Image 1 (cartoon, rainbow, N blue to C red):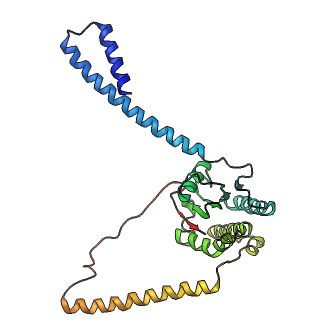
Image 2: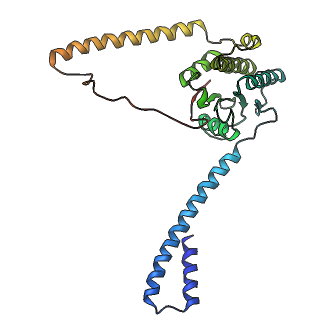
Image 3: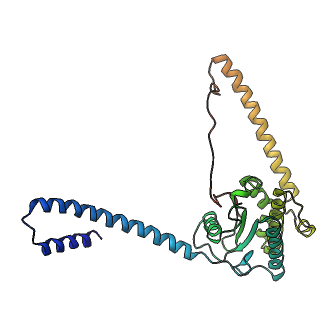
Amino acid sequence: MAVFCELCVFVILVASNLYKNKQFLKKLDIYRKFLINFCSAFFVFGFILVKQASAALSLPNPTREFYVNDFANILSAETKQYVYDISLELFKQTKAQLVVVTASSLNQKDIREYNLELSRKWGVGDKTLQNGLVVLLAPNERQVDVCVGTGLEGKINDAKAGRLLDEYAVNEFKNKNWNEGIKSLASVFVNEIYKEYGQTSPGEIKKNIKKTTHKTEVLFSRAFVVIVILLFFIFRRRIFFLSRGSGISFFGNGSGDGGNFGGGGGFSGGGASRKF
């Protein structure tokens, strides 16, 4: 690109027959440098646009059903019909959209990045309310991800999205029970979205919400949390008494300001992912 710009300037010089005009050459040199910088910047900007466009083209387009997109061909007709029906009814009642996608390959992308780009490309959710939710299952990579629109993050934050994946889908996916896991996961998320809008979900949805976490796993996780909290308070108490005796403060002077957190856009990265 830079060589091409130099050649253009040289041709202009020859055509004008102004080699002996030093003042003109000085000005022309300034223009030459500007032109080179402009062409270089244009080339870099164009490269970025082409890269983004190619990334967008590598993502699939939604199917005609939109709410269920079984690109991996692992779902039964009954499961696809069920997801479509409850998602369509959810949209009619709340304007929120839940979309289920199965991918045959993530094209070596991180599943969070893939799902976020896909959700934005498809424009899932109401444009104003930003209330879309996309469940992405990659059976070959053995990963699942849920991408939550900013309008639903108050009800389904990252921690809750991860917990729902653990409790309603991961164990099913471990055993390749794709239909059971997808039906249960779609049902529990649709139920949460209805709650967000102060509505009661249909009875059929509640029947398909099935926890897959074993009781022993739940008890162990709860016991672990309790032990960590107890240890925290025990060590904090000991440190407090040590600091009183030595005059050292371990907790600051209480004058610090809290941090500010914020985000924007239809999908800002909210959600969670799991391997199985």
